[in-house]
Amino acid sequence: MYLTVNSAQTYCYTGGKAFDVAKPTVVFIHGVLHDHSVWILQSRYLANHGYNVLAVDLPGHCRSAGEAPSSVEEAADFIAALLDAAGVPKAALVGHSWGSLIALEAASRLKERVTHLVLVGTAFPMKVSPVLIETSLNEPLKALNMINVFSRSTLAAPPSALGPGTWVFGASMALGKRVLASNTAVNVFHRGFVACDRYANGEAAIGAITCPVLFVLGTQDQMTAAKAAQPLIAKGRKPAAKRYRW
Image 1 (tube, helix red, strand yellow):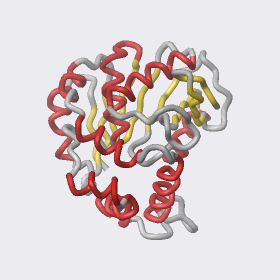
Image 2 (cartoon, one colour):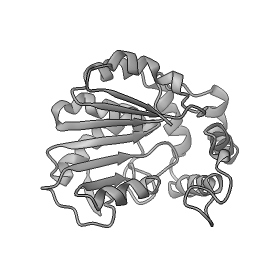
Image 3 (cartoon, helix red, strand yellow):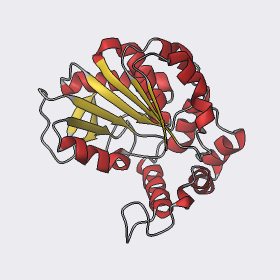
Image 4 (cartoon, helix red, strand yellow):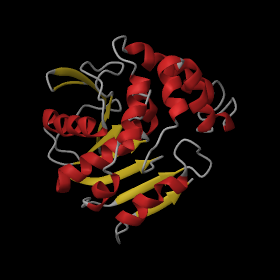
């Protein structure tokens, strides 16, 4: 489904179901060098169980036009505009990595308009190694390989996630190359990493959240280590909050 957001055509995967504003809505927000496709299984499941799904390609990524966000705050403003464009009064936000910071910031601004918040592979501060930032700018394919090793996708050797014929590491490499090539005007890899590295409002944002929060953290993830989410968990701990590890 395409929506016009901030005067630019924006693509949202709906899980194969028609969008119905009367249903509860879940917005999925991808991380650096990803797109809507990383949420395919979750999108299809929810779309077939009574939910609207908006798995978005962020501006300047793959099927979405517009300027690629240069900060978490800018991307959070985009999420608010996306809800307006879809005519959605309330929604749950689910974000991964950079997308988790975007979801966090958006939820802090939208208050009661966000019903649930899910932070997958999150951290604060989400500092990125200067070497990795430099490599993402000047040797992006080398940096792409590095992040797929650090995120431990190599643990899922073929056949992996979906069974025979799939390979998590290889698929992640292919996706990253496709997303990088989708924007010839801006290096979205480098821009996204810089946005993560510079985001400073995490603790204030989590303190302003009014909805239940679910943390999904990887114990062996070296990109967003589980321990790096503890400041957010401590700051945002409320009776409704939940913490899970996988």
